[in-house]
Length: 160
Image (cartoon, rainbow, N blue to C red; front, side, top):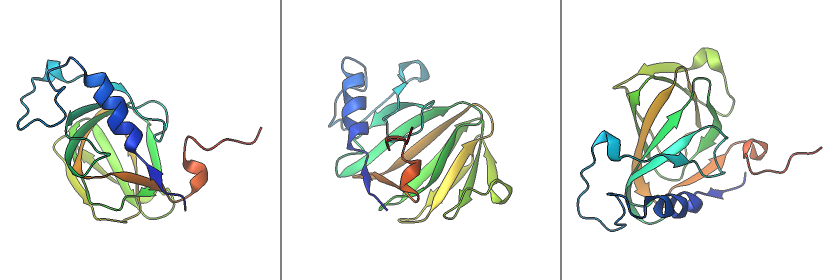
């Protein structure tokens, strides 16, 4: 297995935040109206199609962070794990979660808006947006994603 750092997430999102109400990287408090949450492209460590908004902190650095991810219906993140706990809240839509090293749709549990999940460190898991959905992720960085199957890493060159 190959460890894939999500440090890119922090730098991309911090650059996207410049000039926005959430621009301060070391803020002591954050107050955001929904219209102030600015989504941009997800880092290349994630499959194409998801957009993200950094609400607070920096996932690439030590300390707490909160990120929102917007996903279209059918969007999937293949089996992966993190060295730290991941806390997930479904803000809108429906998202299905599965546990294990292989994507097995029949075993997944679908949660609606308001649903909550915790993935302990190193738990193998995966997800699929069953509808257009917004997922809020928080934790304590540095946040790293390791795909169970390195070929699932969207940055892995594909044979032609």
